[in-house]
Image (cartoon, rainbow, N blue to C red):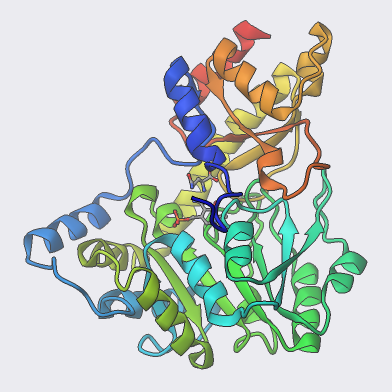
Length: 386
Ligand code: PMP
Ligand code: GLN
């Protein structure tokens, strides 16, 4: 059946995870931890499950979680949020992204997107009949090209959707870059959908700054978080949107028509998680920073060109120095396939994060949200292979 979705392929994460399974490869492709989330969060969800919290919860989320999201915004970012009129709980950040875009985009509106981009962004913008305007960041620094970004905004711009800390680049947007984006939003009277799922995964002293905290941005931003990343529970699919009350009605209606509600027992677990002491959040990033260092060091020793990662689960690498000695001149898709089949390690080809054919095709993304022994074994396998 031909539909607007026919042009969308199966997501690269599913494709590469299946290939990893087929070849018995260590999966450093799809970004999911191979360790458990916090026990008290899991216990709270299990208790709620046993406690009869199993029917439809309120549309915008259980009160405990909405209050916890508001308190989290106040604690980390000094944002004063009304839990009853400015928070919507969703079934993962994936739903949240769609709901926020639905809340503001009409057919024919333009939406600015930043490449490389997460794979759900473009299909959803197109499904809504909006027109994507792509601006590309260039490796190795992934700096915001200011003139190009300014040129992408125009009278039809309704929204910008961007991700910081950023998948797959590991970039954390600087205060100056965010201020530049804020100026464009204010000038054009448009909105921002801020995918901040990796908000607590920043390294080397980098601090995540929500665009929503900048002057004039409180009413213009929809800020998205994910329990998947913040509590290492990616299968739970609990996300949360923080937005001004002026956007809340549309965001809630979008959620109403997408999924209506999200598992109430899991929501109670996440509420306990968001209330955890500051130490929890600090040790989460410290532990991932150590994993980043472990994998980055090993990849560099193998000859990969390792690009810096300031946040997220991911390292982007230039694989050409590794394969050049044996005359391999395939693209990133061929490289990731060969790595899976021969070295038995799986990575993600970075061209999957680009909309057009002319993307750089010599980068592979490795996820480091894995046990140390698994990271070491993956490196050992690659050492035997090169
Ligand atoms: N945005 C980005 C940038 C992601 O990497 C992911 C992947 N986990 C998501 C959104 C989706 O998050 P969730 O699993 O909560 O739907
Ligand atoms: N966000 C995860 C990643 O980038 C994958 C999520 C998914 O499989 N859709 O690896």
